[in-house]
Image 1 (tube, rainbow, N blue to C red):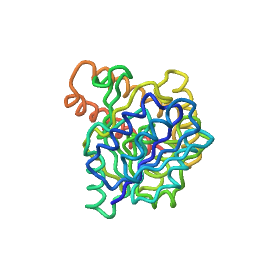
Image 2 (cartoon, rainbow, N blue to C red; image 1 turned 60 degrees about the vertical axis):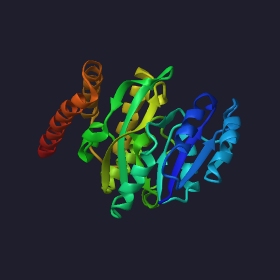
Image 3 (cartoon, rainbow, N blue to C red; image 1 turned 90 degrees about the horizontal axis):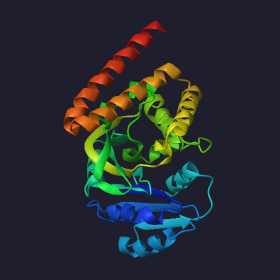
Image 4 (spheres, one colour; image 1 turned 90 degrees about the vertical axis):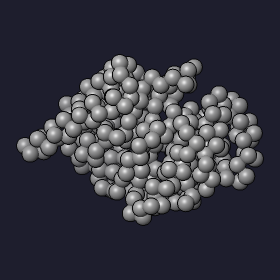
Length: 283
């Protein structure tokens, strides 16, 4: 099974090395690695040229102007020829060497499966070995998307044929095109999904979705737009519940271990799920 992995770069020279090395180290070798660069002005291209020969033809890259992150992702998707497509950001890297092997195994054992997803964790850019937040997708349920929940996007792998059915990322979203895409595919499209209980990706903090109050205002605005465009009812109150969950998640991570955190968080998610059922009954 060929996995098409897409990385978008722009002035990513300082972090791209660890991204490329983590892909190169994967035990699953049937990889088509596509790099879409937005005409970087730093040493990104030098890093690409250094690593390209090591992949023995499995790495392809382009460098040309684009209309932003999601436009570049769509370029990569259109270039892809593999059975399954995933996205790995240029400042992230795989947590282990067998991540793609486990992704491939899941798809190979179930022909009906459309997508898989797993866990990720966040680190400070200067302390890559210390987890500061663990994002477990184990608690994710399809109906929780009405509260703004989503599986960790960097851990999401989808059979390529579904991009033809549902389309790609909407390029006129500033920050939440990934949520809109998953809402369209998972919730509205009702595809077959499976959680993989593995820590798939290590993410550096400081990205567009983790950059403070301003970004969260944009996320709220674009989440509401995503629901409206997909004909799904929600409101600011329902979407705000997710932030209560996130605060609890962060506080728990600081005080207890990850294995202890997940059951507690699952309990909160179940209560939110029950709330969703109660709200639906009144509509």
